[in-house]
Image (cartoon, rainbow, N blue to C red; front, side, top):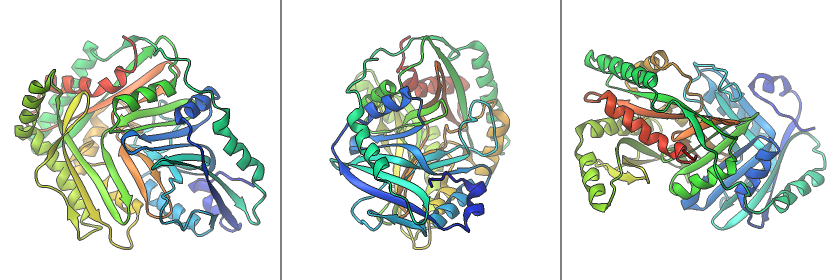
Length: 456
């Protein structure tokens, strides 16, 4: 019997002998966005992940097992449940050292403190093992069937057969090639502008009073469209426009959280952890010459350098709790995206034995790049000052498995889609020297990846 279990009933079933059955097959390549198109038209829940530059794609649907956690202990409880589940598993891939299978998919919210009607379809920590998982890596594609079942396990031949057949049933291409039009938005609404100026000025007063050094404030902007968009078309545009970003979509009960993030929260591979310290920003130039001028301006900006340095210090110090080998350059480099430039420092550390993905995530999320410093005061100030629930925005999206492998993006450059309503988000780091007007313009720049998906 297949089961979907979360934290609340996991212990209740622990006296029953259970088994996670998982089987992997190599399959022919197919277009994952055709799969997204099919699933979204059938209003099925799914998770999509793509790293275009790395030729790594994931698509999963159907729940063999789920972890749905609310509250402060969400990450710790996730780790405990995963450790218990690992003890009873039967698969034909678990001992493979060559193939890293992304078995758990999902994400965590920015904060467990807020609850809103807008984000009711997602838990604070929301992970699942898909019954049907497809992924492509290094030119090869695989199908993984998983089921959580009592022992002895039943015969899954028919369900596996259906899963293998899924790529063969997809319609090639997407007939809906024209994005909907935006007919209403509060992007530059005067009341929204006044609210933002007031929040930034309050934050600057906190900074002058030495209560905080930095706080990241965010905007929640709504777009009403003239029709419901095709999510596969939006993802295709993001893949094309941002090939060096993480492109993702998590669909649950009619809500689809999606985006294209340039920021790696943490990657776990071969015993190493990698992260991006990404903060400070400036627009791209209209030509190569202007672009270089703006790049140099960014590299010389004490405001931006201090903002980014806070992130580097936080991540490197966090990594020292798990490693005696932490590596990064003292000088940031510039990360160029189509619409914006950021200061960027890649950081890596050798993970010592006894540490897990979840102990690291508990320490490093949220970083000062999306929260502020000092962390506790910045977080409490955000929850007090922002009049919206961030939900999964500035949370973490990604995947992991039982072998301490996984990858997580900071969920920025993102939006929540419900039918023809898009709720988009952007944040700005407020430090000494920040200006409300320039920060408002920066927020518009960061909203472009979402706004540019639709016709004006």
